[in-house]
Length: 348
Image (cartoon, rainbow, N blue to C red; front, side, top):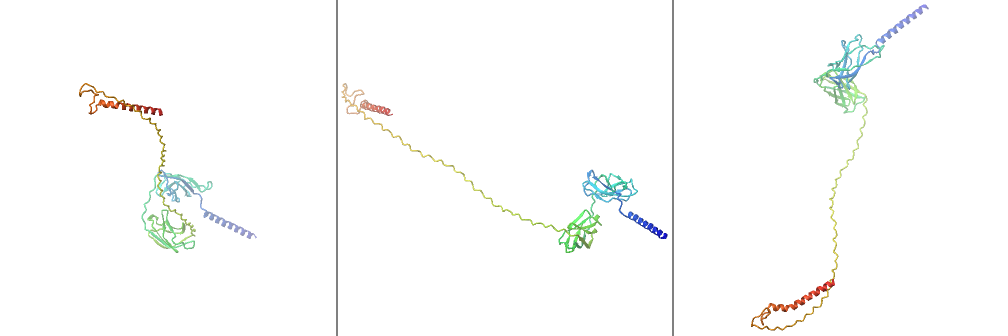
């Protein structure tokens, strides 16, 4: 009985040791330590906010530890992970821009104490670079050709689909040919520095899980590219043609008739009856004054002599004689005129 109890105790102790050892081994090989620091902050290059897409990394001076690369955006960098590295507390941290320029600002490294502090640790640190990095001159390289089998969602992609190839972040080309389950495309980044960079394939915006390293001048066949199901293409509605109105010829306006002046009828003169002349009674002709016949008494005293009143018997009458003969007639005429004048004055 005692022997059985001792044996059971020994087995229990042995089992506890085995479980403890396994737990220690699991703890040693379990979750990675969270004792690293995440840096973020602004980036100034040559006195200006950094352009987008510049690469920044940090390293602990005196060690081989280098952080993963982060890129700038809107003049800032975020989530730069540094550490954890033990036994290097107090070492300087330097920040490098595009593997060329070291920042003038440096920080000091301390491993976070995850027992008393939250891990991972977050730190805001602004970095300043005195000058901008040089743009590397690309060394031309030979083009490469890739071809092989292609499928999308277990089916053949439509012919004439667009295949896109990317090499790194600086080169992208769309084209090539797809016929049935075969594809072929040529890439020519003309940059020798991309040698060994993964060549990524995209179909309809979907990335293939297969990649190949870029080698200038390489002709690589029998590549198998598989893609997930392509999205259904959105039908493009056929635009309804808009009826185009046919321009009608513009009617030429008829010339405006110039208004004729209204003729004012000329008044017909009314014949005014002429006043009937009142006949003026003509007075009876004046009573001729009886002529007194005078007998000429010859004047004695000379044969042929005589004055103005003397007449030459049988010869032409003298002026004096004519005047004497006309005097009664003139007198009668004058009397008639006076009478007519007086009669006219009396009628009016």
